Image (cartoon, rainbow, N blue to C red; front, top):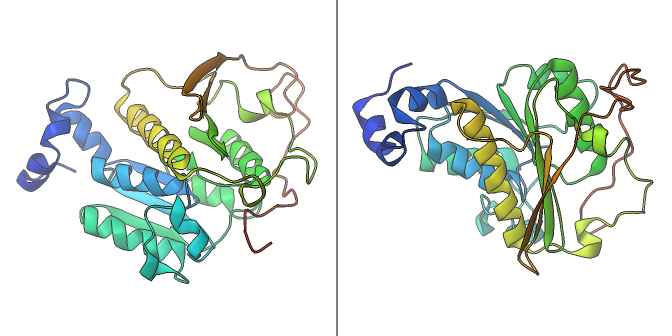
Length: 267
């Protein structure tokens, strides 16, 4: 698909970048990025992916907008309370960029549906808020050989890394979800809204760089951010030969649905 004159004008500030150019912008236009979770991380990621001109954006979320979401989930407005998040997000994307095709999945990912969903996309962004979903996304992307960006946030802190096939995966660092109740949810521990915004933007940046084949990705690197003390640390790690998923003697042969703890103030 070639750029129209209107699109050339719309994306002109990107196109003049040597890392993008007309060919790069066409790559974005022809790309497909899936965002799992239209919440704190997914909201800024969706807005910037659409603004950048990613041609097809998938959104997976089975929840409705709650008033407690509005403090950090910036794609949703007050009038969207009680509306399905996927439709609220789709409406905002259409207003930002009518050229973007949006595919919605009004569901939560699970072992029976996730591989079929991620299979259709070039890059996956994990915007979920619970460990079972994060391990499920990691495993599905490993089996489907799909790159993805992991993101996790709590209080004033966040972490992110990017998985590329044949490199270290999420289980190379954390082999399994923590026991239920050990790690507090954001409803128990709290979350500053701007932390979600910062990390979600980094995840969108990783997706865009991957599509453009530009710069360095957070592959085999865990970026840790502490906004309270303004600290940014990058921790290098390697593919773990003992990883239960991608190691030399893998034990995990299929997807696992772990018990989920929901980040919900009402619970």
